Image (cartoon, rainbow, N blue to C red; front, side, top):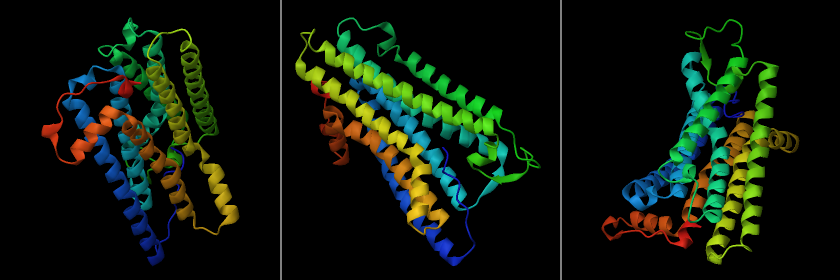
Length: 317
């Protein structure tokens, strides 16, 4: 995360009011997001049928990852807005989680697209790695990749002169650790590489599914839904990549509006980090017929009417 904590402030009444308003906007949005995620995860945990589908397991994994990402991002935002200072040794884990989960989202989208491709091409004899009882190996591999990369990133940088990692209080932000030009170059290269690789995978799976429709005798409705799902992953990827547009949007705002730096940073955080992360899993989850039906029943507080679930082709495409 690059712009979450660049929020210099002034000890004035106007700044205090602005701080209260911003916190009042961010907190309810995050609470609504968290409530929706808890409902979906509860549905997954309550019905074994969902846990027997690789697609739903990966989706649950995405929900957990995005929850950790937004939780760490919101905490960093609130700490920066309040200019809360603490030792770097406590700051690093929070930044680590934020960075790792941010990069992990794109990898999850690529994996979910590949899972749709495998389910269409190998409907009867799915490769062992993509079966529901072994999909956890792929999930662990994604976590391993996303934990190694931030470790390398943070290892390249060095603390600012005079900063004791164990005792010196600092405002927890990326610039505290990202002080090396080499580290900045590494982050730009890494983020660009992630975007290109995931975009290529999503495009590849979409084209292959499109070509396979002419060879297969499967239900065309299922294949069509799988294609739409892969397109949705591409849209989710674009939503996630909006976080990288903050230098451009910040420059445009500075040129065309006389905004306070705090307000510019908040606008970028809310519109290009918080909202896309909020919409991405909800759009994907509410599109699913079985999940949408159970969410409606949960919202109406009628769990006794839920009954058994059948994962039809309309919900698993």
